[in-house]
Amino acid sequence: MRQLLAAVVLAAAACATGRAETAAPAAPPLKVCMLSGSAEYNSDASLAEFKTFLEGRYNVACTLLFAKDSSDSIPSIEAVDSADLLVVFMRRIKLKADDLAHVRKHCAAGKPVVGIRTASHAFQNWLEFDKAVLGGNYSGHYGNGPTCEVKFAEKAKAHPILAGVEPFTSRYSLYRNTGAAADIDLLATGAIPGHTEPLAWTRVHNGGRVFYTSLGGPDDFRNEPFRRLLANAIFWTAGRNAEPRASAPKP
Image (cartoon, rainbow, N blue to C red; front, top):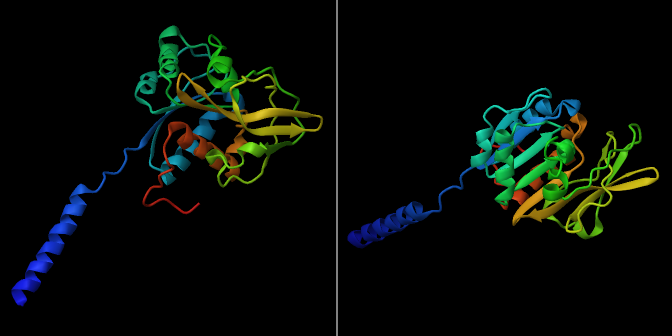
């Protein structure tokens, strides 16, 4: 009887060991490369804080690269080549051809792209990025002052990017994007008295997912619903679930 019991225990241990050995390995971190160069909206500080937010809560590894208004290059721009996803928050930076080639290559390959606010006019020598990649039609903006109310498109309320995102407002000027590409999937509009404009959407470019929002002022990044929207967009655009870190703090 003792021999039989020992055999059962050994068999159970062997099965458990086998299950442990064949368990699926943890997914590698999502590699996100962020390009910052929008001094008007303090993108350096906002993206640095958002990087900390993402890496503290999710299985993400972010590389944050900085461009200055007077510069035509971005140090370590080669990091774009190995990124799973590219985040662009720049404003009218005229990159030299070799640096811009890394961004063009990423987009041409159909790799995921997330554009924030001034990304619609990120590259002064590639303004077509707005229409060709993001699907926008940036035509300036309304004046400062009116509070912008973010309204979710009725047909998009069940979209994963809007999951857990509560209605919110923004104090920054509303961008004019009427006439955006016909193939965008509108997620949200921005409304001020007398005007409503497309505010956030997705589309597919060369087979890859793209997300853009004209939000992105410093106070937007301090707003929990906006951070949630942007985090959701990053994982959806990358085609990955939002995998939390084991030690991540509760939201």
